[in-house]
Image (spheres, rainbow, N blue to C red):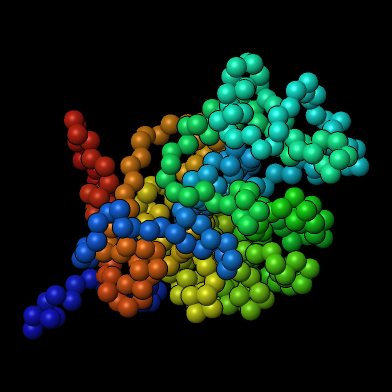
Length: 386
């Protein structure tokens, strides 16, 4: 055996994922590569869909316990994006009634041109819980364009400065929304477009259906400038069907989410590591970004999803315990994250290129290796049998 063969360590992704096994994130591990750049040179900028760019490759899942207005604003402020699923409009008994009838009256207002610091100072000085921001409506009186609350101020002041915020051409935060494939969803979509939604996600556990394909064609014909993410899919065949129908992005995952029962109940699905690699490989040929949806329980899973070909990672339970989420909080231990530097990649595109050129290598981890790679107790050690 020559020296070159001895250095040919691990498996290329194409070989590893072509053996008939369905791997989860924990099943595989990347071998470290060569670093020739500093940590601050790493860029995580990416694409959510064909025309929607993000500085941070994270998406908040359209779950009613995860993403409402607070989470969507927080994600956008950090360069990521949230996708909302609830619709208060759908719950109203009288849909034609004016929104003002549901609003609390305010005796004061501020000009829309005020800075965030000015508004925050005004609320604190006057001990107010909220204040509307208004602008002149072409001489026809004042028009309310925003509402800032004391809770908004406290939350925004606590945001870390990690990346450029996700904003559209109109200067507003980017936001996505999820819809289904029923006829009633077309009416919801109309209202979402009027409200300024930037991207729509078709929400289905099995996206390769006539119902979704027909909805994709309807949306692309009716709103050609609106980016559309289809799914969920886990195979190249599923992905190709939706790409041909016209999607601008693909959502990958069946049964990998923390509360998803598709694999147990319906006996279909795929390990998320295998699914992301297979779908991303076919989607890359058409320039369609991939959203890895589900299966994220630590920061290492995020790195694996992105390196295996995903452009963004959609998270639900990982964010559910945060202050911005509407659900209840349950603490299960701290989290510590790091960048993709150890892979020898300075960007997501670089990581994808290294993977597809067989430079990055992987191995399958045994159960014992998974335990070894996890967190060990510093004070006590419990031996586990298998």
